[in-house]
Length: 67
Image (tube, rainbow, N blue to C red):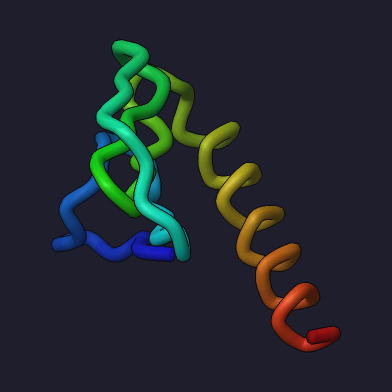
């Protein structure tokens, strides 16, 4: 998951790298997918996107810890 200031991501958003590639998809202002990267955010409020990213990062950490 990329959340840094200089990451290529939507405004107030995050980019998640997936294991499998997918087709090009885009929902304006909400999310986009190119290959194995999914960008989430854009027109969503900063607080809501941050809460979502924190929860997603926690879930990814728990999944990788359990195996």
